[in-house]
Image (cartoon, rainbow over all chains, first blue to last red; front, side, top):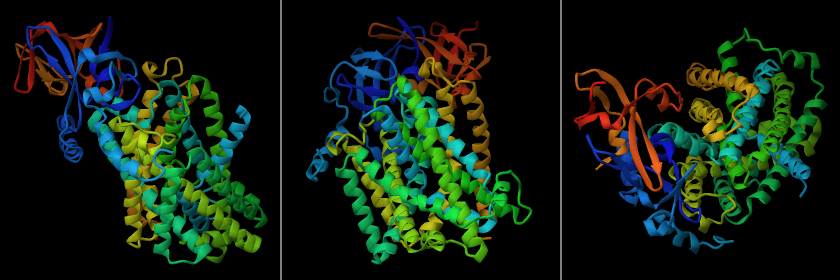
Length: 115
Length: 408
Length: 79
């Protein structure tokens, strides 16, 4: 049982999968429960599709460049929260790190890419 | 390799790597315009970069966070994105100036057309970055950059009036042309406290797996490396004063700056100066482009790493390639690299608070730093330099306008 | 379902119209794999927090005191 501040300790922190691979950032959180009920964080929201909500004009521009991808990771998939947010499984299982996966085939074609 | 040897090598690389095109331009120009009167600014700049680097290095070692990780976590997505944009614009301008500098140095050696050398220079940098291990690269560029020590030799050989030089270390304001004087002071500080060096340094620390045990090494590296590099800046100013001021020359071209070493030392001095400039500026270009890629990757949470082969961090690799291409496009327009350098240094001074402040805050945060938060000395210096940095950030653009980018 | 970003930044008021400032963070409790939201962090400290200056001196409103969330504000029960 630990006390954490969502903005300070979770939001905008690095996401790491079970192998320690960097696979994005916590861009937003999904909270269920409203007035008069208990409120619970049910999912981590990641991806350029969530940037517009965070940063106004600049965020919209960044989102437009980055794309509309939205990834939702159920909170049960979080293994631990320390300086980063660690997930239980590998990044592709959540649809994370797809940006790198998409660019990799082009990078691989250039000699020396996997020295 | 023993720790001591590693430290020595690191310091050598830091000296060669400390001087970039901003320092070359501003230090000699300041000497050529005001003689030794601005000597006192150089130690202030050197101490500033030591303070900033030491904090960022300690943050990296203890918390495992690089600069833009910390910026995003601390100030949030919106403010962090603005800081990222500003930093990338400055990085791009700096990179363009450095590529121009490399091409000019190559032109002095090989005499091929400028634009051809621009393309060749960028291609060479790209191949080096893509295929070679960075440690190796750093050593090569750092050691060859040591050829710049010829300016130190030249400074002594020119037998300046050492009393006048000594007087230059007493802070004062020139009665003659005070606005231009202040512009140069800000330029010297901006050129010494280049943020890209700090981004590069802290990201490198994380890749080298620094832990709290390495804080001492980090501190020693930063202090000795930058201090010795600071001596090179002093030498450049002395050469500027002794050679150019006397003849009323304004060193607006890198070739002119290299001639400063020829005067006392002849052709060998000139050759060493050009080679030194080539590798120091080339090495700086590598640091700049990688730090630009680090910032973007760290902010968005992508995989990153200079030791990682490009296939392991594809978007990171794509980022530095894209930066090189954009920088090449900028210089290909024929803009004068020295003028570009002045703009890059001034805007770098304006953007400096955006990343300095979050690092200062994180370095004081026990949640990140455990027991290694700033001690009293670190905070006295840290906050003193916060004031310095805010002053130069606010004054930089007005002074640039008043003095017409130092043309006055 | 709401997002964190849609809650934080809203004005927080009591039912009788007293303004408590803006919500600048949410405090939660992590138990196993359940993260429950316990309180709103409100007040002046919020602005400082935005620049990364963290102070201990902020006020909290327990989540159970939230009466309704509408428009651009969060309404809580009078203390």
